[in-house]
Length: 136
Image (tube, rainbow, N blue to C red; front, side, top):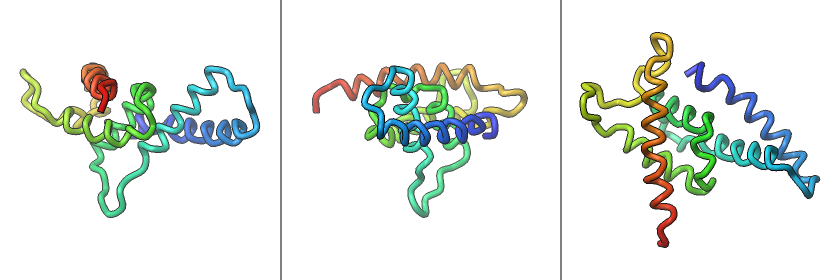
């Protein structure tokens, strides 16, 4: 959790200062816009429903996804939907793996599981963006 959440505090502080600055600026460069968008997504991800705490492995998984920029293509209003779909997807058993919890234990024993986590996220993203692209 510490590995995944450590840069979060800094990124959110930068987002808040940029958001305050952006209120007065009319023309923002691409890097600033991208940082504002990522800050919005991080702000959405850290919200939890009242009286429904999110399990630790799910917190780590979604913070990892958000902090690595995997949510940059997902619209901010759809972050909650993505989070729910991703958690359902990550719980599905994988062939050749005895343990079906994808991120359970990630970050232990020297960070084992990170490469597999990245592959799992990248495999899930096209499905979410395809669903988003279809007209409702």
